[in-house]
Amino acid sequence: MLYIDGILYRATRPGEGDETKIRDRLKNARRAYRMNISINELDAAMDLAINGAPTHSGVAVTGENAMNFSAVFCAVNIIAGSIASLPLQLYRRVGDGGKEPFREHPLFDLLHNQPNPEMTSYVFREILQQHLLLTGNAYAEIMLDLRGTPAELWPMNPAAIKLRRDDNDHIVYEVREADGTTRRIPADRMFHIPGLGFDGRVGYSVLAKARETFGLGLAMEEFQARFYGQGTNIGGVLTHPGKLDDIAHERLKKTWADAYSGLSGSHATPLLEEGMTYQRHGMPLEDAQFLESRVFQVGEIARWFNLPPHKLKELSRATFSNIEQQQIEFVQDSIRPWAVRWEQHIAWKLLRPEERQTLFVEFNLDGLLRGDTKSRMEAHAVLRNVGGINADEIRAKENMNPIGDLAGEMYWRPLNMGDASEAVAVPPAVTEEPEEEEGDSMRVVK
Image (cartoon, rainbow, N blue to C red; front, top):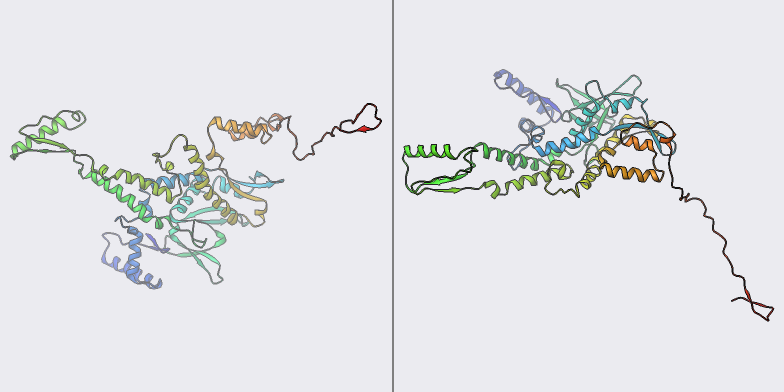
């Protein structure tokens, strides 16, 4: 079974009879007619879905083999894993700018623990983020309870979904089921997160945009594997001034293999007879800067996924002085945009308009920004000494239980500082008494 343009097709299996092949061919012809395309165009679409789009490197790229490239797998894994592992909480606004977790709302358990009976919140978010990264869109069907509140969220295959408009110009989602049937899901029942796109409704597919980059990386990997697998790495050449007969040739091969092959003979000194010479060959891939090209491809993949190269284990330019700054850039430039996209679509699709006035969803990014112990303690001390946080808040950030009395809830402030909004008392100016000259009843002020 495969999806083409949102339609489910069954590919002909090897060994099937002619009747089955003819029947499938007629079915595909009818589908092509309904889609207003030729049967040849349908064949091309089926070949594209099965084998992937061709690239100039000669390697066809699909969603499956793109993940065989280690840099792509690592990029998708690190972003999807980060989004899935971040604490996701439903908050209620309290007071003037305050917030508190709102555990009584059904959405809290749906987002924080289990979106459906078959997967955890981590797996659900990881799946949808993977779809977002590769196809540019993530879909999950919203199942409502009797009160009309979201009760379950089920991920859906992006290849089986098409965004359409009905007769009233409302957005609907056409879904092709595994049995070939089609059903329509209204927009308010579909949790759809689009990535970067042209119209804001459907996101760009990174697989389509970066096909040449992925294909080149896969081609270089296959070339190097074949280079070693086919035994083309010649370590050296023995040259004889004359011509060896078959017996001498076999004896030379056996002697050379017994004496100089393997780990024990790797540094032995060869003894050459009858004017033979030995010429050592270097690794040709190094001469062609092949290894450097493979490292460059890792950087290309990092650019496509907006990741710092060190996250793909490419540490050639990373140092101990800048690795912490690169981690901060990873959170700010790579993870935070995805987190904001998730937060806004959750509020839009899973909360009622009146609920959005007091409720909101937020990822906690503090865990990704945690520095070393010394830096964290210094930051806590600065906030503690200016009255910004209390002892219990510090203990919560360090995953410790609160003290549980006034000692943990008390806020400190320096005694030699005051409220900047209070008026400052200015002492009165001191005036000098005028001097009186002798013999004169008048005072002269100097």
